[in-house]
Image (cartoon, rainbow, N blue to C red):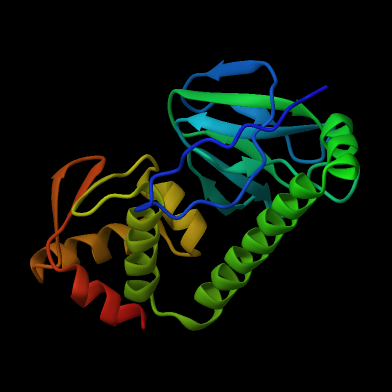
Length: 215
């Protein structure tokens, strides 16, 4: 029988409450597909290391990134028989793969697992609501600031962010063009809010100002 392992999560990082099950590990390189949109949803995945994006391809061919996932996150949970989104890696990634039927059976037997799954689902719903609000109500600068702050919170970074996603990933998540994302980051740098020491690094120089922007 599968067993639940409660892995320690740093207090500085905000992670969804999630069951961690015994199961095979699978390694992926950068930009590899873990599962496709509309593929059978017969497995659930937990991120051990690395990062993942989940996204939908719209009818007109555009890509909408639904979420970014970091170590500790569980993804691929679906109510239906197929995946609503596809999942691709952002870099070298290690995931634990769990059969959905085994997870369902364990949740039926173990109340603690069922509660953790409910917490996970609630957290995912909250993130989806926040994302929808951001896309519908926030200006470009507020969206970029919110993404930087969320990344800092979820990874436990205080000042220096390791940014696993590309500018295009950021744009497809924020509902902006890549030019707008790049222009906004440059403006933040000129205003002294951030520094861009490397392509995938962001230094938060004035976190308070960024937080005030999204309040």
